[in-house]
Image (tube, rainbow, N blue to C red; front, side, top):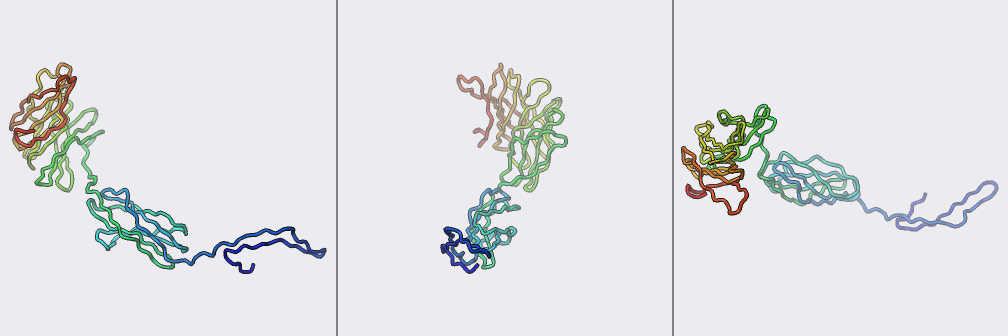
Length: 319
């Protein structure tokens, strides 16, 4: 067929002939040629904001217009402005423009990253504008699980502000028995401590902890054997946990301490609740080293139940 002009309407008809004569189809039909495609050129790109950013991962986004030539793209990123020390693998795109993404991992928590999209084809290369995102300072850290436990929970944590030391407490369950958990963070990793078990108790649980110094922590919870649970306190001193003597609320059938706050190594307050006369009632106990004593807690007028779930102590006489 001879060369046709772009964007032109042509009319045509069918004619046939043989030795008996010539026949021409009646009427004619038409078609219009398409516009001549523009010449190919370097791709057009746009860097878009990163999404799904965590402490160690992010999704990088962008737009790519191939501009008539087979194109491939990648994302470049790094921790210094204008310096892209890492990149994703090149990905091929067809001749249709559209949104593109790439997942990146192994990022450093609490870090600002600079990134851009970068595309190339036979007509040239095109870097996108430079954008930034910041990873969360939080990251998941591994903690040791007690051997044989079918369930384990860390309930509370306390950190000594002048050091990198933290202590967390909770409970684990193995063969239907609850045992206390205590773990220590040294600034790099967690290690398991040996929490003390209440003598003669089937179950021992820790719910709250406060560390007034790097070498002293106090934890509270409950212990249980046969009947209902009873208040429990432990002290970590000189690298070892020991059960303390904790007074029971008068006429209580069940009791527990769930939170503790210390303003010094010698003064702490713990709070929780007790079943007294069949009513859940808020309780508090005061530790003035080395002894615990019950404190009077006012109950709101008309309350049918009450409990205290958290406490902090700023001074020895203010919590």
